Length: 147
Image 1 (spheres, rainbow, N blue to C red):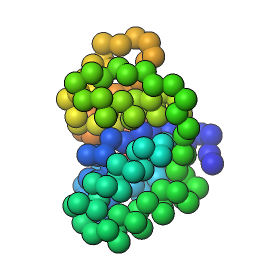
Image 2: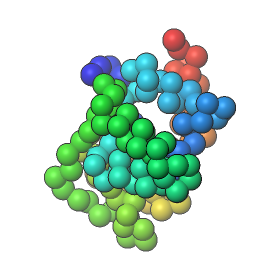
Image 3: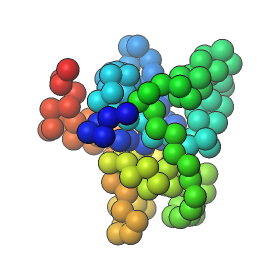
């Protein structure tokens, strides 16, 4: 696993959007496949991705993605030892924050309004981007067009 790759955590709403071959955000998934990004996950995150994918597609698709997440070299499965409980409105979202902190991820990407609380929390610091902010950031640093 590359130490220079960008370590990211993706909320489920973002993960689902990057999978489609015709998605304008497919470049994120391609960066994971190539090792430019390391997707940081936990067991709880994989379960949620799989559950939502099974609802939106088929169980076979969800199972294939679950196997991919468990085996791909650019997926970092992070053990969560401490729960910060920073989000109180939707406690289920805390798994993404805890993963970002435990994996020392560069950022967490989500369009969910519950995560906006992170903008006001100094410790533990988690860099939050919406999907559009992440794309702008990637353009500034020329990550999108980098091969």
